[in-house]
Image (cartoon, rainbow, N blue to C red; front, top):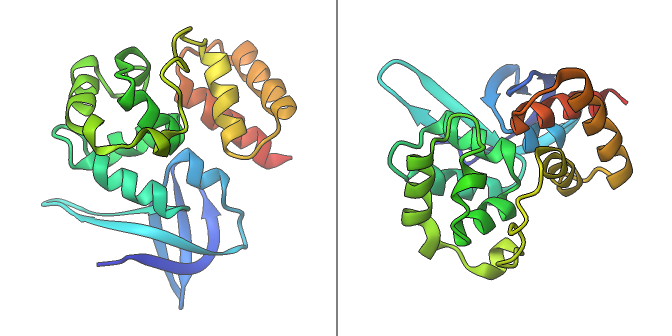
Length: 197
């Protein structure tokens, strides 16, 4: 129904934005990646996916067409709904997600909040043949050493455009203060701090 919406970002929340277009404010669910790419007051083109369910209408938005396409691919997998797909996109950048699936990294995929081992295995089984290794920019040995959550969070922030130095500082601060073992929470809290600066 909606391919994209151009409008003014008037509000940012932890997992959604309000995009105003011709006097209408669209509440759009977004990933951490998209959220960090937007600024309040900026005019943006948001790629969208409109989802109709029996009890609700959901509008999901993406800063890039790549993220929009990957969301559609993920939600085509059994047991992967819009919120779980957004959780996956919030935990890892698109190219990393493709690399994890191509390399059958079940343990890394299982670190996504709400994504159990069986669903991670289903993702690999159903999507492995749909991606090209060139799309992922990930070598087969990339995940061999199973980096810590702290390192993963730093790498994710760098992939979102932040410098290695500022990413290291904010992640260490979040981990020290919150003692969290959830990578999505680390990234979300880090983004909140970085966007305040």
